[in-house]
Length: 165
Image (cartoon, rainbow, N blue to C red; front, side):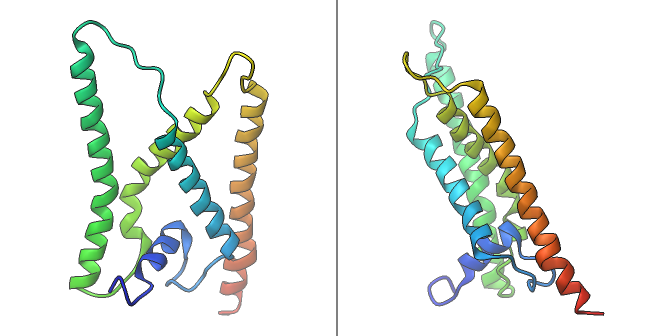
């Protein structure tokens, strides 16, 4: 099922947004933008070290074990819906639907935001990201999301449903 089919790709595209009865798709560049955005943010989260570790006496081991427990649970919460979706599709019926992967969105979003936060917190004595750059990035991201929403509604969904009349 995973080797000889397009199950994982269809599930991922549906997770991002294939609408209707898996009939209304958007342009490939929209899907690529979401994939690359999440991938880059997750890579930044893993690569950039977190320097804000504060240790108080003997609480080092407790903090480390709690942090490891938290990250282990978050990874488990990402992987469990993927495993259950594959299991359900294999045992019951072949339906690569991204809605089964939606519970993993919260931990994925946490790590993506953490990666962006780590990127913007990078500072050296000579170079520091000004608040204006961060504000422009946030506004650009919101405009991009609104643009994708408008393209999906007015470019794909409305023309599709108008042809059904």
